[in-house]
Amino acid sequence: MKNKIIVTGGCGYIGSHTVVELINNNYDVVILDDLSNSSVETLGRIEKITGVKPVFIDIDLKNDTETKKVFSKHKDAKAVINFAAHKAVGESVQKPLMYYKNNLYSLINMLSSMVENNINGVIFSSSATVYGTPETLPITEKSKTQRPFSPYGNTKKIAEEVIDDLIKSNDNFSAISLRYFNPIGAHESGLIGELPSGVPNNLMPYITQTAVGLREKLMVYGNDYPTKDGTPIRDYIHVVDLAKAHVLAVERIINKQQEQPYEIFNLGTGNGFSVLDVINSFEEVTNSKLNYEITDRRPGDVPELYAATDLVKEKLGWEPKKSLNEMIKSSWDWEQKLRNNKE
Ligand code: UD1
Image (cartoon, rainbow, N blue to C red; front, side, top):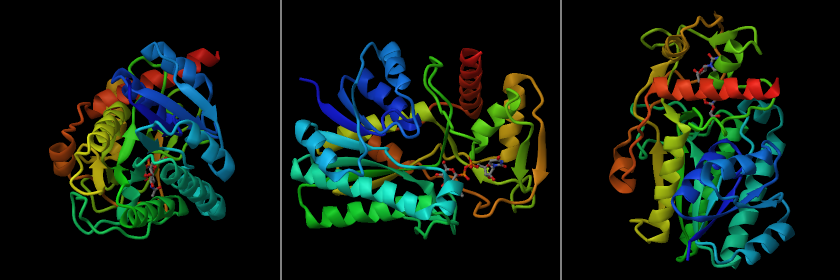
């Protein structure tokens, strides 16, 4: 018998890559998604990659009654991975209530339905944004968290606290929060990747869309930070490496290997690259020049963020494999495929 895992937001960017890794590791997957920021076509693409079409339920997790129904139908699930959330930082500043409502109502409904149906393990998709402006680098899991700059970021911090409180009240329940640094890249098949809706906020899709001619030029937000070249430093991580960490986290929960009922791990490579490093790698990988211009800082950006990776290596046995050039090449291959398919 295969173990069943419920994946909320499984049609999205990180969700779809994780579903592929779960299927490749012999799990039965049930995807719950409202397709608000993803496409149903992703299911066929997952099938092309793995040979298996996962069960899919189109559901808005804000709907308590529907959520309960679905979870009681799949109460044999061994764990849940929660990706379902809105994630655009700028939009969350404009529409904070929409973000709090969507990201937290759905989380609370999901957790209630889990408890009711005795599904006692969750993996939560968190973010390095919970560290705010770090006091020391690299960032360890023990580094202080701060109120994030954006409502989006704050939903991640609050969600971690909700999970923590639930665990303190319920001896059966356990969780792993994975704090992502900067996920980029796409699956090597070129069939799944990031599909930003509208104008991308994040660096990598902005670069690839500029190179492909969809955007005129990349604006580099500030070169007066206290870093080696003045541009901010981030820890970019390949989405497939990230997805594999979720499979290890699922195994840890199912096999009851946790040392504490609530564990938190950073997911980054431990290497910091500046915005100009990323642009230079992109130009090297694609053998082309990128049109860019230095402009003012973006409010809320921190100068430098990169992860300490010792804990996740030791406890999950996870190690990222892909270099920055490999990440960038896969993002570029994906962007080109997307545009060719549209022509
Ligand atoms: C952002 C969010 C973070 C979220 C993550 C993934 C903030 C403060 N943080 O991280 O909460 O989890 O995305 O969605 O928004 N840059 C440019 N030009 C651009 C875009 C980005 O110069 O057009 C620079 C930024 O200033 C930053 C770096 O590229 O230094 C990375 O930016 P981005 O990809 O948006 O990620 P973060 O800001 O690190």
